[in-house]
Image: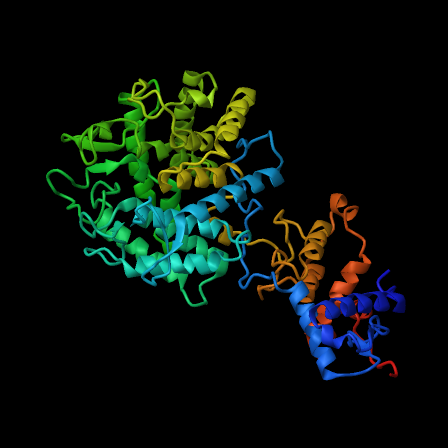
Length: 569
């Protein structure tokens, strides 16, 4: 099959190019057609009956514009759409849709989020996430944006450009206290100091960017992440409590706000573990994980034994530092309830449970999820907007913000009842948007990334690199990867093994070297088609004769490289 490209095929392709030329260049219709009479045996893509440099340029333009215009400018290591990190054994995922459908749901949701909340900064400082109709930006939203965009690389060809712009905006708006951290609100209305959660996500997003694109380009993502993490540790982690403080404006030993006043939604054990792996200081960050877990366990045992719900804010009181809900601590009367901060807890803790398989986190998340399922009879439409810690509803209305994070918690369940609960939550969530502000959409989108298998720990995926040529990220280099390469050739960079920004013949060679057929994969190896061979031939056109010599001898003939002698003209 490989050498079976005959002159008739060359004429057919030549006619196609000629017709396209006539559409683009009417004045050139008098020129004679190219006949690709020697494609199988020479590196010459075509031999003109009437040779002209203009003709050659025309064809080069047509080939390039047809096959390479859509190629993203940057390669990514962990493109959206494939599960790059295995979740803990037994993790539930929605069973009512295929993986392709799940990925499309996330892509569609991202498209709405991007169009509604992502914007170029009018001041010229990159990109920012708008918080509401006023156009203000908060560090929390900027962090969400950096995590989301890094995860969507491979789907969005603008991802790296946007990510770098988000980072540029953050650099333009540092905290006035610790400039390694971000001003919590732009424009400023209440001081330009930091808020813990925004910086925590910004650091995690930078680690994802380092895993995704590497740090050898214009932005050293890894160094930037370490710098932010150092700021978080120095200015926003309690030196004795090891708990997240509300921001760099808090004095560790202050009276009203201190290292003993904290926000439950700042408990991000998955983030903290990643910080430890990235900085080489796992003992410190593990101590933060343990401190936050101890507070959650204490609250769930003594304040919400029947529900597992956590309050927005917590204050550790007395000589024994007993954790208690803290109403009216910072934002209002609901500070001691399960409200618009704590509503993120099932997602934050759930991600750690599915990625890191920590039994403490798993138990905490399952407790909350079990209550939510039983209290609603498994009907997500009965989830209400906020609760007291005993489960009493604060309101009769719904908000998708309170529903979406529960879908991540539901992934830790077991059996058919929990599977149905997860399926119902997912059905309720994946097409639901908040129109008033960015918050609900951003939390829902990140919940969807986790539920569909598209969220990952950047330090874990780097520690376990995939085999070269494993384009579908299943751990094997096999025939299905060849199919992925064939479908990506000249169209996108989903089979870019050599990280040069496109899927081309060099990537095929890398696949060939790594090919290890398994019994199940052998029968799935697609037989090379005429289109595959022709596309391979186009790769040769774009390269040099040295590029041709890089192919193995048997492949040279198949893709159109000469084997030592040029056919006579």
